[in-house]
Amino acid sequence: MAEFAFLLIPILIIMGISLAFSIGANDETLSALVGAGVIKFRIALIIGGAATGFGMIFFSQGVGETVGADILGSGIKYTQLMLLAVLISSIIWLVIGSFSGIPLSSTHSTVGSIFGVLIVYSIFEGGIDPATALNYEKLFNVVLGWFLSPAFGLIITFILFKIIARFYLSKLRGLNQIEKAERNCKWLLLIAVVFAEIWVGANSAECIGIFYGLYNSNFIDLGQYYIFVIICGIFVFLGIYIAGRYVIRNLASQMTNARPSEGLILQSSSAIILMIATFMGLPISHSHVIVFCIIGLNLSQKKETDKKGLFKMGAYWILTFPIAAILAGFIYWNFLIVGLS
Image (cartoon, rainbow, N blue to C red):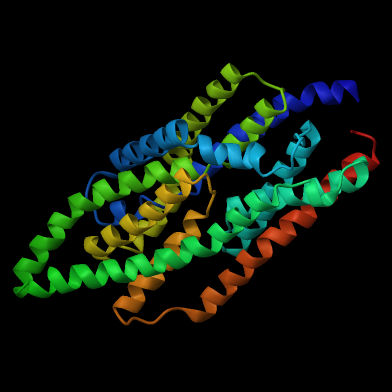
């Protein structure tokens, strides 16, 4: 058991860095930019990956602290096995979502896993009240952010399109003016996407939360923590450049007819939501926000929304937290049963 405990820290470090890579690999933010053909594909990957890595390195501290410490109850710190159970549970549920074709939230999965592990920990470790095992006020704020952020994404996108349509788009006359306006929007879209990628990296900080948990539990020191933050920033860049290109190219191929002005509105709205949530230290789901931004855009243009697909996606989103909690709790309970604690 002592040898197993000795191996846990390197395993957690490798899994945490791998999570950073997977965050980049599953990021679809560049799709609108690539689909509009603003810059060459490889250049877009480099710029987008660098922006995401920059955001993760310099702006993820608040979200990392929330996941890695603040959500825990007073006096509670992660054990190595708790962090391992959280990572395994999150990865399993996200893989299930991938095979189902549903963009699940790694944030929901990670926080749900933390909840399940802490409840099992409080019940079986003894002397800990489940009512104080978590910081329920912080947890409530995080969950509330999950509901408010998509709603605000929808509202902001709807209002933003109406304003632009009223004071700019409606004044365009003829195809030449419309095409010229869209060409100008391409470069504004580049700026909006870079801005959005910075806050995607800053808010998608589950991997940073793992390392902050290791630091807060005295498994690594502060200097090592910052080194791993930088490494995570590098690996989220590599995730976009090496593996994310397939997701981005696939989605971009479906967006060649999309207007750059629409992409500009969507990315601006989602970036604003992510930035505000990040400064509040609230981890939210970028995929959830962007989906509701799209719904807001469709509503503003009086377009049909795929209600059946939206219902299926919503069901998975709602199920993510409890299923991740149950799965993580079960994994951690099995660790205790076999005497690994």
